Image 1: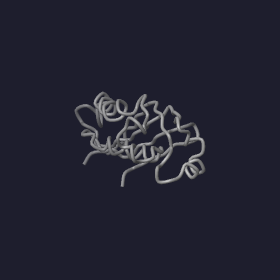
Image 2: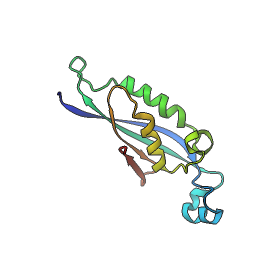
Image 3: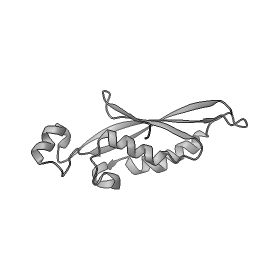
Length: 137
């Protein structure tokens, strides 16, 4: 077995969301989610960091070609989330509150099938003060 190493890569996308659930009354939503329950939603410039591990290919000296990783992330995440309303445009969030915790899980599930390495974790930074990380079950 060769050396295992992790590759970290950062991506950006902008999306809006409203934190709200039909399981709660409007008053409970307002109390729990505060200004994030605004009926018109609000947006964030998200920063996505992913870590992929694998063995170094002796021929290329790389875990994975960055162009392959970038096109995979572009197709599975950026095209789906960028400049979208998570509540309205992303099927996964039609019945699930689009918190950044849930966004982390959804992104992980979308990226774990990357064929050139093992997805170790995803980290989503929502604001300069809030970030969330998920490493699978």
